[in-house]
Length: 227
Image (cartoon, rainbow, N blue to C red; front, top):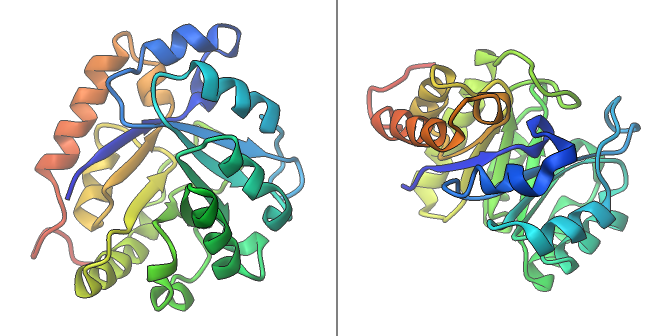
């Protein structure tokens, strides 16, 4: 099981975004939070910004759509060349159809769950997704504290993935630091979104290396974590 570190540009210096991307070349993907001020009470980027990022980013784009009506908007991000497009379960009534559409275009399809959303209805649908994102904060703003209460969902997801043998990435987003990444890794996460802890570091490359090391040394396994 590989461990991926995806820095969130929500914590980057927007005025110098291209140079900021250069500071995280050792990461795996660039996490881009799309917020519409409807699904969440904040407004960030749109498709035009993603198209430009796609042109200058040294890493593939990991799009996280915190928006209403993803059926209408999500395919456009896949068509723009995003490597991965994740939409929220709470924002769609047809998650499987949307995931299939994204895959057909050529992007990895992900589904995101808010902290209060039950994972059980999605365990039997795992083959339809390439990634499940467990929010470890309430979506909408960066810099929030990690919610350890979300870890049982990760344990359930990791157990289901191991039973089926599917190649489904389990991502966590929110409050990921050198300390909390250990907790998430033990619970079963393999893909970690880190914003402030990376872009706020004096040496982002060293911080990415530290996060990767901490995740690897606390990888999910029998007896690692009981929830």
